[in-house]
Length: 219
Image 1 (cartoon, rainbow, N blue to C red):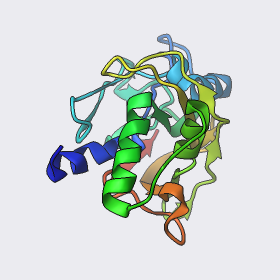
Image 2: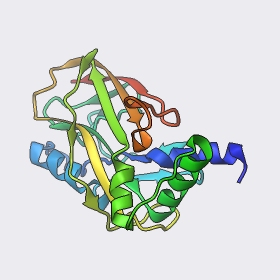
Image 3: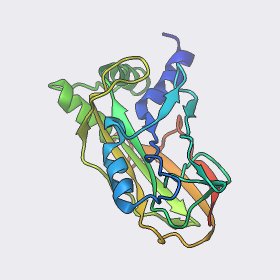
């Protein structure tokens, strides 16, 4: 494997998945229970997205849920700029990180090739938990840090785009009850961090996953 290809595949270190909430009926609003359920379900049935073959571009697939010209679904999409959302809905900003056996093997190679560090584990479950501990996500809304919530590590029940079983995953994000976001325009910046095996003094920016920087409106 050449170095260029390895750098592209390094994006496998932090595969972020953003799920969309279930579509509301024409006269329904998204409840806080809907948001919480989707946040916790994520890779066990709560997401809708597609990837390209090399992970250097992530293509997100929006669900057909438009109500009076607004995005109706409660999901504030952190990479789609200029969207408008319903004030009456609950909202969620969140993403998941997962690991497969192939990702673990790639992580072992990259840690040795780039950092001269041997990444070993007694069994695959421990390896997954170590790997997932390397990644964190933060966000600011109108310049103010958001309080991010992390789910416990969860066993996956699906497969990724290559057909590899998702072994473990966790979700991270911010959830808002109906009315928590007042009508107006908001600036959302989401940052992705990593510290593989704690080799750095603290988390560093994940250079494969640059920050998402968008504006959105609540009406």
